[in-house]
Image (tube, rainbow, N blue to C red; front, top):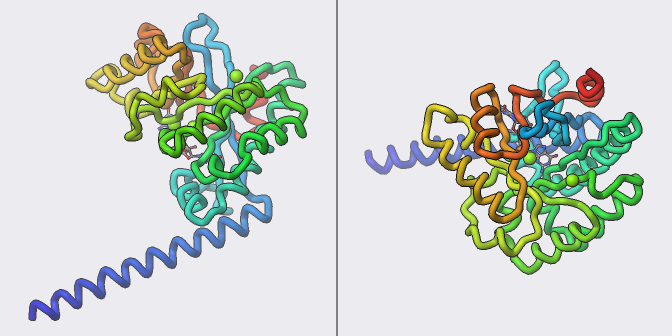
Length: 276
Ligand code: C2E
Ligand code: MG
Ligand code: MG
Ligand code: MG
């Protein structure tokens, strides 16, 4: 009887697993097709200076959007990990960088002297000559390298440290700055911060969320002070309230990004937003 039960459980699990795998495969196939047919979009979320009175827009982050065709979007939090597993993120990521360059060029020509930040996944960073490829793309689009920023997570820097140092140094000497995204949520050692030529720490939304009611503010405070001591700028993501902005400003956080200021928006909407 026990054996029968175990077999049933096993069957249940395996069919569940099969279903999940079929679902993933279907989604990957659809993603590849939609990407090839030019259906993916890049949206942009403003990044603002927190320390000036005017809260000037200093940059924006490029964020992938996958339309379902029914008026809504599949979250990149769902499909980017799939694209990473399928090896598709290298191609898609390169396309996002190209879009970001085109957008930066357009922004500059309209008098908006702001940077565009692009997210980079581990498999992209591992491509041989990755820094060279980024350089070439920026040169091809005739964009100021200082106006393109890369956002990498701790998982990227946890890779073979010498290779990472080399790639980042090459990017930096070209003028491209690198930020550590979701800082504090990974499991990397802090010692890498001294070794890597970084420009910014992005305080993860998880540490902004609880401000001002929970202890999470303590971590935001720590990251800001760490940044100050290491000569790195700090930017807080996921700022949703005035109180959070006020507290982060008082703590000395340099920049902000969050729904309180502006949500990610399509290209045309960002241009309209910057005009007003
Ligand atoms: P991320 O790089 O940490 O991007 C910030 C995410 O926080 C975005 O989610 C943004 O919409 C969201 N966000 C910003 N402010 C607020 C706020 O005030 N409240 C809340 N609740 N959320 C806020 P999104 O666009 O869904 O992207 C999720 C993740 O997908 C990104 O996290 C990034 O890891 C990944 N991703 C997006 N685009 C790309 C891409 O082009 N390449 C790669 N490799 N990853 C990407
Ligand atoms: Mg990011
Ligand atoms: Mg810059
Ligand atoms: Mg983040």
